[in-house]
Structures are given as C-alpha cells and as structure tokens.
Image 1 (cartoon, one colour):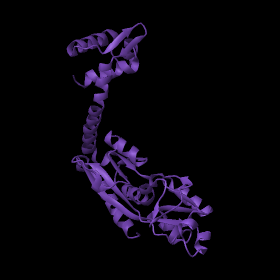
Image 2 (cartoon, rainbow, N blue to C red; image 1 turned 135 degrees about the vertical axis):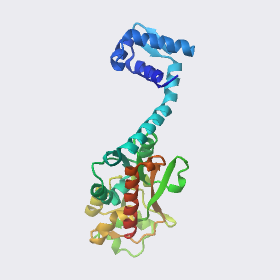
Image 3 (cartoon, rainbow, N blue to C red; image 1 turned 30 degrees about the vertical axis):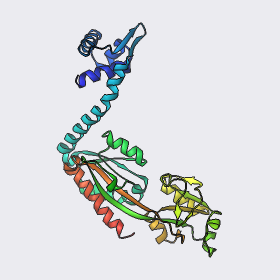
Image 4 (tube, rainbow, N blue to C red; image 1 turned 120 degrees about the vertical axis):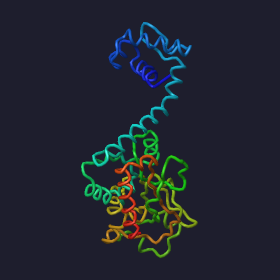
Length: 296
C-alpha cells in the first residue's frame, strides 16, 4: 500500500458513495471503481460493503485508516520541515503558548519578532497544555511554550528548553480584609473566596494547610486580575503574572507560604531547530526569559 491507497479509502469513507467520491477526489467514477477493486484484490480483503445506499467501510478499512493517522502526521512533519528550511525570512511559524506564557513572555517576544524579521509571519494558538501537545504531535504547531517540565520530556527527536520558573503566590487588593488579620490559619483562610487557574486543581497547598477550594477557575489571567481588583477574592498564580500590579500598588501579596513552584519549557522538534526562522524565534524566547528573570 502507499499513501494514494489510503487517500482513496479515506475519500470513499467521507463521501459514502462512488459518485460523491468522484467529485471529492476529482476522478471519474469508473476510475475509482477500478482502483478500489484492484486494491481489494491486492489486499485479499473487502474494504467496503456495496449497497444501493452507497458504500459502508468494513472493519479492515477502519483499521487501515486508524493506522494511517501517524503516517499522516509524519508526512506533515516532513513537509513542514522542508517549508521552514526553504522559506527562511519569508516563512510562517506556528506557535502554541499556554495562558501564563501569553501574559509574561509573549508581548516582549512579539515586539522583538516584529523588529528583527522581514516578511516572516507568526501564527499563534493559546490553549491548555494538553491541547498544545496534541497539536504539536500532529505537526499543527512548530513549537510550543507552556507549563511543561523540560526534564520530563523523554523524546530523542524533540528539544526541550527550560523557560520561566517562578514561585506561586496569593494576591489581593490592598483594601482586602485579610491584611487586617494577624493569624492566617486554615479556619481563617476558609472564610475567603479563591480564584485560580484551572491547571492548579481543586486546592493549593500552603505549607501543611490548604487554601479553600477555588470559587472561580479560569486560565484567563486578565479576567482573574480584574476580578481580584474589584472583589474580596484571593488569586493565586506565578509572581511574574502580578509584577506590574504589585509594583503599582494595585495588588498586594498575601503573607502565605505556598509551597508550589511553577515552571515552563519550550518544546520544538530537533529538525525544526535547523530552520533559521525557528532558531531565531527560540533565541528571542530565551532572551525574554533572561529579562523576565530579573523581575522574579
């Protein structure tokens, strides 16, 4: 079998009939019928049930398509590598970022990218970590930067570079009643509402105690900050997310020892790193991380 055989099976499954597949695959109906018959003879298996209502895939056809998905991803990866290698300064990079990276690194990265590249373009997807990795594995993204551990990436074909590492803190507006209290024990903390990112789970450890279960979950940090500024909630996130608001006195850190460290990494295929444009973007991210570290 080759990729044209897989395309034939996939097209017939999508169309449901030879007549519909003829338009979809831009081939005549007799041609498709002959190709299908020859393929079934070569495999020694029936791929479709013929009926007056059309074609229904057999279990064999379904099996072939399920096994073809990794092949599709590999072909896309090859095509993408060639594109990146040949397009140089006029290419398009597909970047995936997590919500915190979007807040603390992306503005400076985009500014530098605009200043230092000619006609190159950047397509950005902001998603949760699981979605980012699925898109990356499907070769829909050239590189991803998010809440990953570089040390946990065990793939010889992938390069993982540590990015921002930051301590998780809790903040509140300066007028919050929590700042009038002397002892912040578990009972006292349970009186307040907490806003937190979805990825932090149902509770965040504070030494040997627990913060209350968050009342608001969101990976939209602009929303979390606005909610914290306008209400008596405690918001937890990496310190760098709040650095500007803390510097302006709009938010204040709550004196709670949260024993959690947030870390992130840039993940890119080793082959993609060979492309000048991709390598340049990685360098911009590394420079932005060094600048961000000065504020941590």
